Image (cartoon, rainbow, N blue to C red; front, side):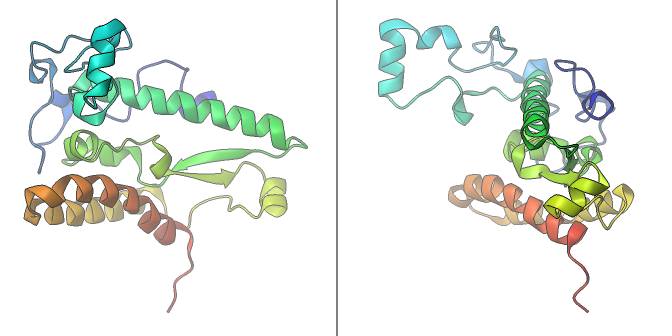
Length: 219
């Protein structure tokens, strides 16, 4: 597993730094440290928040919660490059832990391995900020993960595929196309529609990619 995930807790390589990215489309801010409001210092867990975690303690925290606020609500997270890296690291840790637990449970020499439906390279493209900041979608997030059989015996026993029907390069090109379509829909939507379209539409990309990667041609 180490070869796929890297060391647990290490910084993910899939998101890249703002200066290494091509010009961004749709969500164009570079989301560097300066993008975080001055009121949003980095909390101890590596995430910048509009209302810090400390504010949710005691009576003040009870008041904020009564008003509908919470420390990890999407609207309370200041979207910066550091936040992107922290969120992706969280998802990777959870995914790695799940794979380890599943291997221990199914046993008998059976194993699964995760595949990112949209390759990590998509997050190194002109849509990285759109996916992270607007859609809140990350490479290791559950909406972008499919489980392959880790061995031939696993494939026979569980009925899982051993590999996708499309190489990563083609998967990248197709993913860029469908993210672009979602971006165009987002730009044309009104303000009321945009938040739901970005969040729900991005999670539907995994379904489209699953069909493209694993279903046989219907013609």
